[in-house]
Length: 495
Image 1 (cartoon, one colour):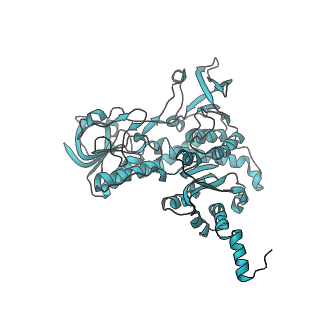
Image 2 (cartoon, one colour):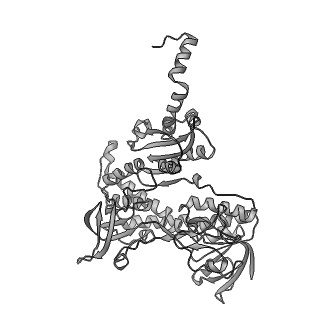
Image 3 (cartoon, helix red, strand yellow):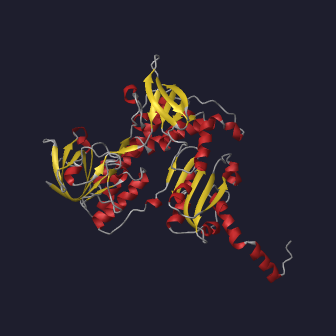
């Protein structure tokens, strides 16, 4: 039996980060996954979706080139070439996750299915198909190997959650795991779900020429965002030709006589039937916990919330940690990497560190982008926090006007007389890049005055951060009382 300081189960964003950190701290590490390294982010998530989104945005730019004094054209979409480009980018990005990169750090990469035998040992049923890219021989002749470790980190991720709607399984559907290998572009698409995946893919496919209908249970798209933020994206998606149905009561799916698929539902109480070539399910994620032998390891879990962890990311077996989507917290690649760093710090360095989920930002990469850090208004109200809102529209910003891209706004939430920043939301061009100024400000306890006093390059989109903060200076330093005091002190005539 081979012994390790740390065994990491799962080769996605969380597992890769955990294995690298463990090795850099001097631990003997094994990284185990059933499939090639990279996880959902590389193969089905961030990398391919953003690549597809770019193609859709280019097509949209061509249609509206007349905004810039250039003749607009109706683009011809070669969907096979779009998908080939996406797959080429996956292949290129995947080079950074090749086993050789981990071998250089002294990490053993093992491909196979892991099961806990007890709280200390695991058995790996080796994947014979990936034998050639594995670093060590192990016991391929026997087909399995048993390993033990002082500490474990489970990072098995999640899979698409499928809602229990009548007829859905029978007629067949797509998830994000199918989109990026499609051979043929669907002429029409019904998307179930109005969160980030539904909105990103809905807009991208619409811009590539697919007739898209978005069916949402709630009363707005992007339910984790404030309504004024979601409204900007809602209007843009409608302009892109996406039909959006809100407050949908899903009745059933069925097959039409012509071979298409049909959704029978009610939208805001009105009966609706929608026919489409394909159905895309985008209703969240389910943690991958099956087959791991968690009961034998003394690890508590449930199939909806995932593995139960404390603030140090320890499971109910204190030798075992769970990070990333499998613990049901925040389903983002950067959140998975952050959790992995916290878990390794606790497991290997033994320095007590706790997660701070309020510090996790996110961005939805639609056009306009939607970025979020800290608390929004809904969250602040739920917690009973008194706050002020500071806002600036992109239509007030010279660079946004020059780009003819000025939909949206920046909204900053502050608390206290010194206007300490507790959150920010941006809906607008390059929101995912602009939000980082507020992430740093929020995490370092900075105030709105600190943002206002910072010199921003002109003309940049980032200058909207200063624009939103400037009224704080006006209120603090240019109040009527201060103005009158200066007039008396210096004898200014004023008005």
